[in-house]
Image (tube, rainbow, N blue to C red; front, top):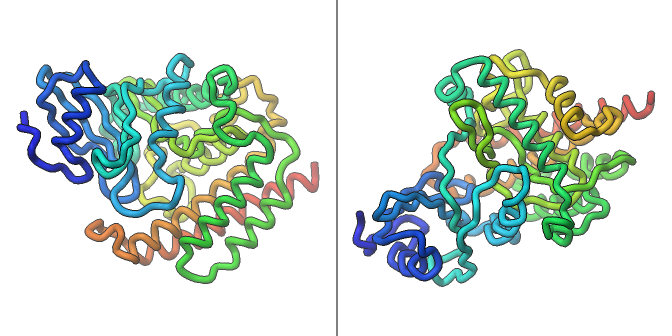
Length: 360
């Protein structure tokens, strides 16, 4: 075990050890800190191991500057605490530090969850080698989303997490503000798509807790394919839950799909053995009790999700080009092209939605 004097990137070890002694009495020092997820534009996660071999998870924002409101681990801790008694599997929050003086940013300490993040086809081959386990993982993922969308936000104390009305309109305005801050070039298609998305919003909506980035890469699985924890809640909101279906389906690329490579990592479902998107929608409808008519507008939500991802991708491009992410290997041509590819995918889905709506 370390003596507590060394520094770990993003963590003032001595100060954090002292804080642990006051706020996490279950952890017996000295403590060891190992980076599990770090660098780039993701929150940093450390595995904290105490002298008795017990493990805890510490999560803090990434290093460097980031947009206001992004990587809000305090807000995330509130959501996790509220969901603790629900059917949604989440880590248990043990302590929250909102004093940035301790280690340069707020952080949250949670129970350690043993599991695997399946983010690429290679992860699938290694962690879910059996086709039946891949099927189970797919159904578990959809069922976890259905459980999330069944949560009574008022009953769990999240009714005031965000305004409830006009979720898509609020999101469009917010992401356009992000676009104005991060854009590196003139791409009129981004604002044109936002205008079209605003004018063609579906009339039906289902209000509940929205994760906003629900996919395999943001859950932990057991080796049997069971979902043991849903992660990354800092952008959760109260709004139209079908926005989560748009994200999930966009990430659900199968081997036969001709979608251009718009993700930084190839989606895990590119490995064989997963059900198709229609089966995912059917399972979700069955578990939520939503009428399939409620899901007929799914192309709209896929268009919105692709458009939002284009804005995020432009922000990542800007950070790489400004050397904020220096040292990370990157294909700059891919960063440049994928923003355009994402807008084209958004346009394709929005056209499909508009055509269906005009003939309904």
